Image 1 (tube, rainbow, N blue to C red):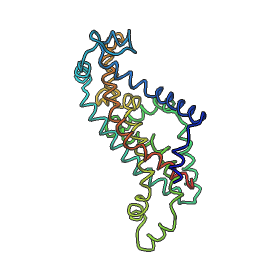
Image 2 (image 1 turned 120 degrees about the horizontal axis):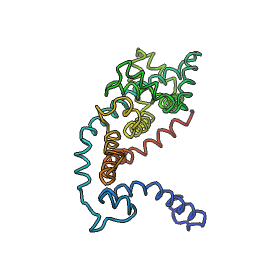
Image 3 (image 1 turned 60 degrees about the vertical axis):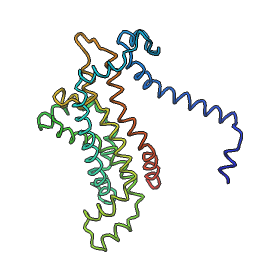
Amino acid sequence: MSDIQQQGKPLTLGGLVIILSLLIISLLFIAPILLVFLNSFKGKLFVINTPFAFPNDESFTGINNYVSGIAATGFFSAFGWSLFITVFSVAIIVLFTSMTAWYITRSTGRFCKGLYYAFVFAMIVPFQMVMFPLTKVANFLHLDNPLGILVLYLGFGSAQSVFLFSGFVKSVPIAVEEAATIDGCTPIRAYFSVIFPMLAPIAVTVAILNAMWVWNDFLLPNLVIGSEYRTIPVAVQYLRGGYGSIDWGYMMAMIGLAVIPIIIFYFVCQKHIIQGVTAGSVKG
């Protein structure tokens, strides 16, 4: 009843200002994506000279930019590598960081407390500070391949993921774990049978955040595995020709194809991000 009454209230000036402000902010965020798709159907000269104009009889190229861009970048191979790296990186991040967060949260030792603050501190270290030493280490340890880069993503994704999982684990009653132990569960069985199912909301949140990061990441795969196993962001930058020339029509088409999967993924899963973060903040 209260909801119906609230829906029937007239819109106030403050409410109207808030709605208009949100609409303007939404347009600012959506505009770059619309421009990418708009220019993906135009010739490269028209992309440069009239980037904000709709395609007309003279500038419209149909799907030629998409067909030629896919052939020039080896898009389907790059899509396969991006999918492989994203899926398995996210899987090991969720598995190992959730176990780590559970252990250091339940333990009262100084080592675990220090480990937790080390993870928190790692969140503020920018990738640019360590990227060149990291590349050398990756080459030395033979991690410069699609399997090795999964280890690197686990390292870089663990800080934020452990922080999120730790906040959520604090809201899980310890009596549940004690009951599982009394019933004869080993710590590993108790974790997979009792604890991990209860971490599902924050696990989904961690998976979504890391999937968007890994899928769109350019620097790490470009530095570590280079052109031999091109992911989509790496393949797109190879559209750059001699002397820095770029066919912007191809470029817009490939960027459009690259963002479609992750946009769909985000819209399908966005409600789980909010649920996971709010659930973890109850006793975090």
